[in-house]
Image: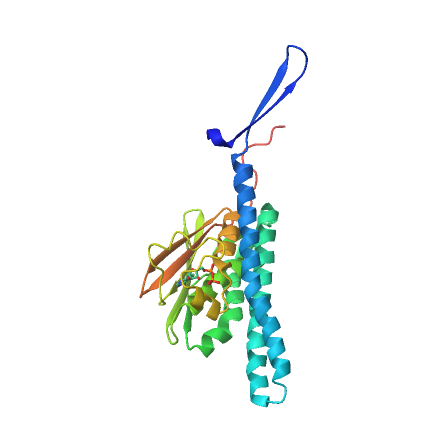
Length: 268
Ligand code: ADP
C-alpha cells in the first residue's frame, strides 16, 4: 500500500507493551471521496431543474391572462418536471445498484425477451424520429441475471443511440455468442464520441456536450448505470466510436449455463 494511505494507531497495554495497528485506509478514503463527489454532483445537477420549475411556475401565474404564454410556460414546465423525474429515478437506481450490487438474481434471461421489452419502450420515439431500429436474430441466446435491470441497461444504450443520431438514420441491435459469453451490441450512425472523451463517458454526470445531453433529457448517469449493472452481472461494456460516423456499445455478459446433472459414480 502507498505510504500516505497508512493509518497508524497505538495503545499502551502495560508498562513494557505497546500495541501498534497499521491500517491501509486507501480504499476507504477513495470510497469516501467518491461519495462526497457524488453528493456534490447530484446537488449541482438537481439545482438547475428545481429552480427552473419554481421560476416557470411563477411565470405561469403571472401570464394567466395570456393564453399563448400559458401554453408556452406549461410546456416548459412539463419538460423540466420530466427531466427532474428522470434524474431522480436515475440517482435512485444508481445508488441502490451500488449499495446492493450482489443482490441481483441469476435467472435465465432470453436475449430475445430482453430485446422485445427494450424495443417496446423505444418504438414510439424511434417512429417519431423516423429512425429504423434493426433487430438481429437472438434465438437461443440466454444470459444469467435480472431481467428488469438488464432491460434498463440495454434500454439506456438504445436511448443514447436514438438521442445522439440524426432523424432518418439506422440503429442496429444484434447479439451473438462468443465462447462462454453473450455479446449484445447497439450500433448507431450518430455524432460519435471524440477519442479524448471516450475513457470518461462512463463516469457519473460526464457528458461530451452538456447542452445536447440536457436537450435530449439526458441525465449524464445512463452509462454509469449500464456499467454498474453489467459489471454486477460479472460482465463488462465496451465502446467503439468514430466522430461523425457513429458508435457501437457492446454489453458482454456471461451466457446462462444449464445446471449440469452430477457426473461420475455415486459412492455406495
Ligand atoms: P446522457 O444522459 O448525457 O446521455 P450517459 O451517461 O448516457 O448520459 O452518456 C454520457 C455521454 O456520452 C453523453 O452525454 C454523450 O456525450 C456520450 N454518448 C453516450 N452514448 C452516445 C452515443 N451513442 N453517441 C454519441 N455520444 C454518446
